[in-house]
Every structure is written in C-alpha cells, then in structure tokens.
Length: 252
Figure 1 (cartoon, rainbow, N blue to C red):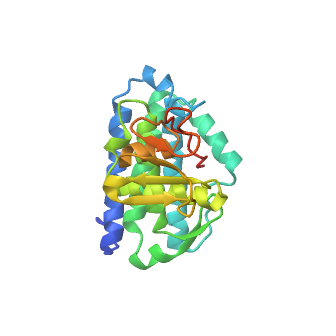
Figure 2: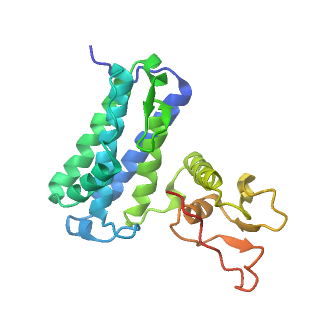
C-alpha cells in the first residue's frame, strides 16, 4: 500500500523536508503571481528569463527524483546524462507554452514529493551521486532542492527577497558558498561576518583582511552574487573607494 505520510521518522530529516516543501510552496506562489506574458521577462540571473528559472526548477525536481529512485532501488539513475544535456533541457523548457511550463513545475514537484514520501527510512542513507560527481546520502537531496527553490524564488524578480528565506536556510547557504570559496582558495584575505548571528567565515588567519559584514539576508545576497545592499566593507583597498563593497568570489 502506498504511504500517506513520510516513511522516515528521523526528526531532523522531517524538519528538512518541511523546509524544502515550504520553499516549493513559496516558489509556486511567486510563479503564480506572474502572468503568462510576464514569464518572458528577465530574471535576476544574466541571460535567463523567468521561463528559464521555471524550467530549471521543474527539471531539477525530476533530476532529484531520479536520485531518490536510485536510493530506493539500488539501480544507478544519474541526475543528468551530462551538464550539456541539463543545459539543453533548460533551454528547451524555456520555449514551452506558459501552461506547459506551469504544468512542468507543478507535476515535477508532486512527483519528487511522492518519491521522498515513499522512500523507506533506511534507504535515506543509501549513496547517490550529484551532477558534480559527489557521492552523498539520499538525505542530501532535500537540501539540494531546498536551496534551489528558495533562492530561485528570489531570482524570479517578482518581489521576493532574501529576507523572505528562513534563517536556517540562509545560514546553510552561507556556509555552502564560503565553503566553495575556501575549496577553490578564492577567499584569501576575505572575511565574512554576520554580527547579529555571531557568524564568521573566510580567511580568519589573515592579518589584514577585507571584512564584509551585515545582516544575514544581506550578506547571503551579496555572497550569492545577487547584490550588495545592506552590507559594508572595511580593510585594504576599501578606504580609497569610500568603503565600496567588493564583488563576492564566484560561487558556482
């Protein structure tokens, strides 16, 4: 018999699933506020319209559902055949009629939710592989999806802001972004601070760092390359530019 509720009983995983589902609902609300004509408008991502964002979120749900099927069956089912295939899929999805594009989002979100719901508790620990080649437990797919829906709801450029994203999601986003910088070595001489959350990331060993600080939502917006409103910068080079905030290192 098909389960009517999540089979996992892990409280942390259930909380993460709830956060991802709320993010999907938030994205759906911002998408549904847009008229069909407005789907043709620019998103916050250079070169992408709102159509591209919507197609990406729809196909992303399908890709993550394939990982859950992998965890459930043990049969390798990659997210995508390649990054080129993923990019082509998004470009194709952006050409769909408005109703087809909306159906893609709706149906793929439901499909992923059912795959999550019906995955047995022990299967959540089975390893799958991301498009970047990382081997992760199936539990990681929940964060992978949560990050996409919350951030890209803002990218729809329809009134959503980083302040609408829950603090736990923002904190993990900031940890992910600064972690990527550290892995690449692009955070040399850069420190990121969120004083009201007592959070510090970056090159804390530097004697003369450039320090970027501000409220959590503003700092994550800057770190994700979406703007620098609400953040300040101090340190080498910023004085001559009247405290101009430097561009964040590349994240993805």
